Image (cartoon, rainbow, N blue to C red; front, side, top):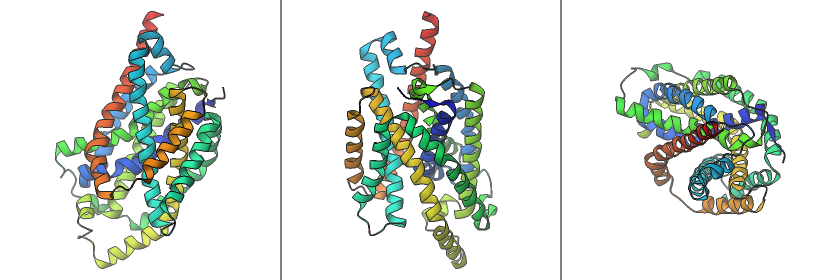
Length: 350
């Protein structure tokens, strides 16, 4: 069985966190946090760092979590855990793909049938998922630096549109809303749970120091991006009211910004989404039937069907923000907690 190295594991986890924060978490985080959403993202560093230690404590190098679970607690409990893990991975794949497909269809390919965009994106992800984790790791390594420099270039080019006075006054968001925004941000950061599913596919052990510092860096970068988003487009209250605080000149600037940035954004999001979707399809197949291509192909087909179903944008965002993000955050906590218990039991029993 082919494997990836520890550096590729860090990259895959980084892609999973960044992609989910940019696509799924951004609307709930900004919606609940308002002008202070960047503070909420910064506060999410607390659970992020805490859970990074727990995830690492639950991490067992070169050991399959599912195999170890079955050995310790039996088939029934493991079957329930498998079902929850599949729910987590499948919904992650759907949300990642749906957002980038919608954006690509609207911005770059307005006259292309949606199903063509879906087949292209999911088809590449299915191909990589069937090939295995090693080709996915190679692709992620190859695109890592282009994505990194694209993000850097995008942010440097956007500086003239940033007005940090939009972040003032600070502290106007009620504490409950700020905590809700923090929890929504943690859901995206919770994709560090991927380490638990990749443990037996990683050649060599992941180091605790590097893993935790990787999480700290991701949290700091996410906080900066949230602040820049707010400083570029204004507080969420204005966004909901079609930018009423902007003058006509400001609206022209925003239009210019979107025209300059959309290609770079789509390149970044498309790359991250393809890599993430391929990882999730591979892991789904690995959970259902290791080393079998059929579950990957079937899940890819189901993903195509789900993405092709028409769903209004407003109802989708409502379900995403009100139900999926907050409740799936608890699902991630449950997965991490269960893996930690299995790891502790193994240490005690041996």
